[in-house]
Image (cartoon, rainbow, N blue to C red; front, side, top):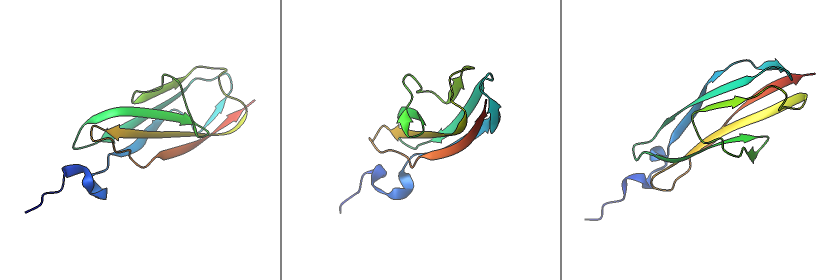
Length: 101
């Protein structure tokens, strides 16, 4: 009998969601707060937030705080994904935020 490792099935990928967004439309002078939720049967090894597809340095926790003045006006896409201890990444999730001048 051959047994497959627990994390070989697609349904065993980590799952993530963005569960809180302080506002979907902010002023450049406002702080933005995002919060994610993660589930993995194997435990989580790494988490990554992105801005317009680029990883945000040091943003490796469930809560992301973007201080005032750190975003450019216009649409900004924030993403989140997580890697389990088996080395498998979750599908990413994104949210669009509009930043006003």
